[in-house]
Structures are given as structure tokens and as C-alpha cells.
Image 1 (tube, helix red, strand yellow):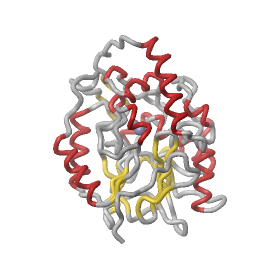
Image 2 (cartoon, protein in one colour; image 1 turned 45 degrees about the vertical axis):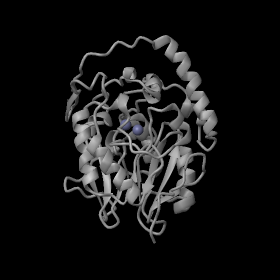
Image 3 (cartoon, rainbow, N blue to C red; image 1 turned 135 degrees about the horizontal axis):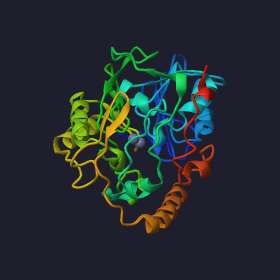
Image 4 (spheres, rainbow, N blue to C red; image 1 turned 120 degrees about the horizontal axis):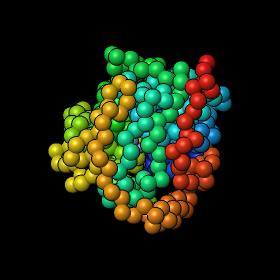
Length: 337
Ligand SMILES: [Zn+2]
Ligand SMILES: [Zn+2]
């Protein structure tokens, strides 16, 4: 069967939507989670969404895999709050490990925070990013490095690909058999910089979420590498996935013309990091609007969420309220097995 580009929006739904054979996705507020694996076999959860959305995810998971179902593992494309926010709660619920790239582990084991976001880059997501945390998490002994051979624990058809730039240890998942690509924040399939697109979810390939991308040159090379895979299904952490030739062609075209933004804290020189976390930050760009922006961004975020009518979230208020960087860290002892 030739699949077309009509993968449905998963926003506002209390169930997941098909992406490719054995793969479904779920959008919580503005970020996608992927349920990888057929209902009658082993499965993994790729990314876990915002903090406090675990109850919604559990409901959707049980619809697909049955009551009490648990994955082989949680895999994180990276540790930003919108992808790792519910990882601790879900891993505790299921008693499963959390896998990520070795270069991402400092931000998942309490050793480092991410480089601060740059809210001065312009556009919707940069504007709202003032309220987002850049702190790392500490999931303690649940965290494991992904296997060095590129295999994905529990899912032999898949391999992980190191796609840094957005974060140092960012990974994407790829299934060669039908060329399905799950790209996390290596790029997006919607324009996060556009207020309108945040409501309409129009499908376009766009740059990784800009205010949180700390090395643009490396991010560009990662996009090129993913375009070279000629994926038949193009799915990312933000936006409705695309299936069919249109997605691959758009990714190829995007890779050929991908230029970093004109300005921004990490555009001229990247943040640097190693196995222990961040080692160098370029100087901050002055933010002229912190106070006014704070008020306006709150109103704007509330409007977006209202327009979306996202009533499916387990704790929608908590999930959409301004995030406090403090208090989001999880203690190591709470996760000791
Ligand atoms: Zn991210
Ligand atoms: Zn993201």
C-alpha cells in the first residue's frame, strides 16, 4: 500500500495515530512521543513528553498495548524538558531503563545543565522559550548509554544514528526495511518560529528548535546525513509526520538550503561540551524584553493552548504553566532500583 502524506494530527486526541507499520505517535501539547512496536510484540517509547504528562501517555499506551503493558525501554532522542520531562515518572511506573547517547548522559544524571536557551533569536518558540527550563535531570541508575553498535535495545529492526547539533548527544532512529526516520529535534516538520503554524500545524521541514540549538554547523551536517538516508517516512519531535515521496524530497531540499539563523548566541560560535557536560558558553546576547515579554508570552501561550483545546493532557495546567527551572530535578535516591 502506498502511504501518502495524510498522517493525521495527534493533537487533542486521546489516542495515538499511525505513522508507519508498527509505529504510532502521540502529541502532548506540542511535542511528539513515538510508540515503536506492534501491539502483539515488544515495543519501546521514544521520548516521553513534557513533565506531568505521564498519566495521558499511560492511558494512550494501554489503549494500544493493553492494560499493564510495559515497554522494553524508554529511549530519549535527547534530554530537553519537552522530551525527557516525563521519563522519570514513566520509567518508575514501568521499572524500565532509559537509554540515551553517552554525550547526553551528563544532562540525565545530574552532572550538567544544557546551555541556556537564547530567547533573542526571534519567532514564536524563542519568545516562549523564556519560560522553558534548560536544566538537566537526574534519573540516576535508570540511565544507560545506547549500545555502541548502533542497535536499539529490544528493537532489532531499528538503529540509532548520532545526529548532534541541537544537543551534543542527540540521536535519531531509523528503520532500513521501510526507511522510517524518527528524527527527534534534528529538524522539525512544522515551523516552530511561526505563531500561526503553532496553531495550524502546517507540515513543512524546518530547522531544529532554534533557541535551544547550541551548534548550528554540526546541526546542519546532521540534517544532511538524515537526508542522505532518503527516508520514506519523515517524523520528528515537533509537527505532524510526513509519509511518501513528498517528505523525502522536502527533507532533501531543506538539507541543500539549510543555513543557520542570521543571529543568535550560538550562531557565531557554538557552546562546547564533552562527556561531563557543558565546557564553554559564548557570552549571552542581551534580552531587551524580559519583563514585557513575560506577560505577553504567558497570554500568548494560554491563547495557543486554548485554540488547540488540548484537554487530553493528564495535567494540562501543570503542563502548560511557565516552567520553573528549579524543582524539576529528580533525586538520584528516588530512582535507585
Ligand atoms: Zn530539543
Ligand atoms: Zn523538542
